[in-house]
Length: 439
Ligand SMILES: NC(=O)c1ccc[n+]([C@@H]2O[C@H](COP(=O)([O-])OP(=O)(O)OC[C@H]3O[C@@H](n4cnc5c(N)ncnc54)[C@H](O)[C@@H]3O)[C@@H](O)[C@H]2O)c1
Image (cartoon, rainbow, N blue to C red; front, side, top):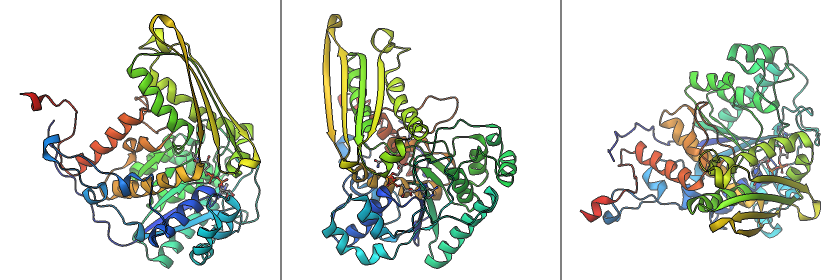
């Protein structure tokens, strides 16, 4: 494969601000993790940027540097987090309520976590029906709210002295909506903000404020935010990267591991039933049919795209796929997922696979937040703008160009991510052809 030109990447000098709408289970697990790791109380398990390596050149060369030595990433010590939430709890109180991390660890981090207080949120109960809280921005138009978020961003930058910022949505899942007329162009969207158009969601107000302030935006939840022409137009005109959506952390992660394997052996699929019990606030929000619909759509598409029923009609055209999430408070964040997979082999003989994943949702999601933030910052410094498809690895419903189908196979996604890093550094892309070893 041809060697590429090295891309100019600005250095990761100074501090990197991480702006997070939502300071619940995922955000507090992420922040507490940063503080714990800085103090040597834990390791960044699950993070490709911190623990991953990348092979360069031929297998005979023995070059496999750490990813963080290969591309110039911000260091964990240089991250400064600012968040918004509808509840006024500081990060310590919120982490205690979320119940993900154990009290002895949280007690050791009480001082830095208690100092982190959320900014008042932009919120609309039409978009998250099961929640309501007191820490909101004063009444105003949607444009007023966007300007208030821009003020927050300016103040955050001044008070912390960060040199760059990334915004990543870790707030609740909003109800399912399709793009409407107000999302068609930036002009329509800005007009809609002035008129407080009901089709503009709080997450779109945050995203607009971020992009207007020169801050890249990533979406960790399944609802639509920047997946529409108006905000993509803004991202392009501001030369900013966007990425999303919905962290690929638990059951869909498992699905995108198993489905490519079945397909590689051309084993057929007649049905895949996935169900979860989940007792945290996210589970409560997803108990509302509108928010669940956003999750259902994002969770459902992976199998169809991986298995390509149009190309393999005998194997994958007619499989039955069902996804359920049940809110079950006693479990808290310790989600349990069951997958029943009905497959068939030689001569159509049926077989079954059962997966019972006893996971911890936020423990799986926190390293993804870290990686997405660091890679989005790298993308920005490398001059990459618009949809960052190379970050599909992290998302259940990866954003993609309209003329493409999304790539869901986690192994292809990882190859794409690493080839993008090689491309940035002018290294030969790896095709795995390998004929040269046998010449
Ligand atoms: N944990 C995972 O593995 C995982 C995986 C994929 C996606 N997600 C998504 O990540 C998001 C966060 O998950 P979580 O478990 O931390 O949920 P959570 O309920 O613990 O935290 C979300 C927080 O967002 C706040 N919030 C809601 N609307 C807001 C708004 N408009 N502005 C500011 N704050 C707002 C809520 O008050 C809450 O504190 C959810 O959308 C979830 O679906 C999580």
